[in-house]
Length: 149
Length: 79
Image 1 (spheres, rainbow over the protein chains, first blue to last red):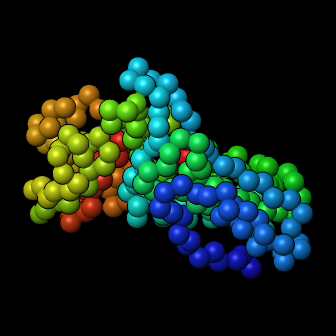
Image 2 (image 1 turned 90 degrees about the horizontal axis):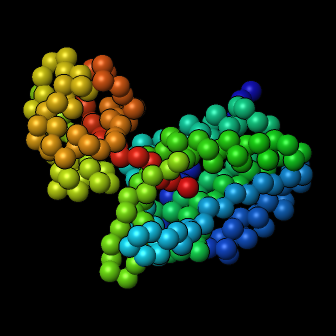
């Protein structure tokens, strides 16, 4: 029988702290059927633009559709890969340069499923989830709307 | 018939609001709506965006149902 996965809340206000990531790892120590974790962390780059350096990204989203799309990506990944568990967190609001805005955490019995699923999930998030980002540039409060490549 | 339109990112800046209600008609398509929007906000013509109809991305031929929620979505930047 297929397991039913309840929709989980993905958005967290502001940056995702290294402590939050560490605590998430620690919570899996009791799940002893897991043999491999793959973790992807997205970090804000200080890209150089004509107006100055990027100092942070302010994220906004069409939240209802985004949460539903995250849910579909999760269900799809559970079907495609032999995973034991999966967690996705994305920032909403301001994330300063150097801090974490995306945390994808997949666990499986063996490494291949975890490696492949983490890449697949990140690519799906980049292209399908309605999240928008303002790159804040330089000291004068200017900004550029970001677009995923 | 009235359709609720949500604007995001740079499109909310162009419209000057996060949402508004526009008059619609039976069997109106996404393309018909774009025509109305471009007339009201000529700046939108040069912008790249997708339109979600009740939270599903539609194409130009998608019919807009009665009291649909429409969202104008600029390029995605998650990650």
